[in-house]
Image 1: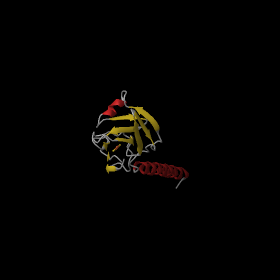
Image 2: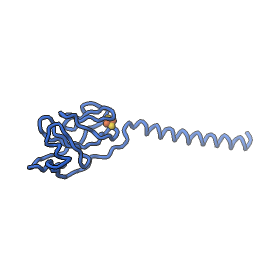
Image 3: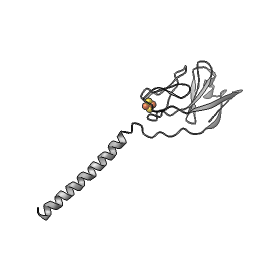
Image 4: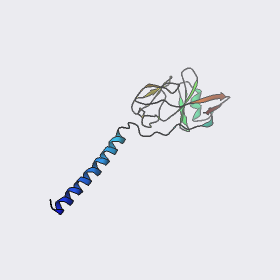
Length: 141
Ligand code: FES
């Protein structure tokens, strides 16, 4: 083998290894089915449910968003506050008007405890504390 052919083969081999390395790395990333979703924050805020838009919470079955928290009033009149970002791929969860929190993107459903009822979400939603005093709804945790 002459010097020219040896160099050509060396270059091809090096390019092949680099390409294989990139493919392996990208495949490893694609096997991770969920992009990283931000961890649920610690919150501490109060909503006045006598003023818009939070007055929606005076009626059972409604919900609002504040500080990345979905606050719902279930069909029994209880307040439920959950982190509003789905751990599957980061979509914003909704409330079904009774007692479940569906994700509109791929069908995950969470109950009032934030637990996964059906996937593909790999984990549940953080649940926050709520306390109503007069028209002031305190949300924390
Ligand atoms: S983002 Fe996929 S189920 Fe919620």
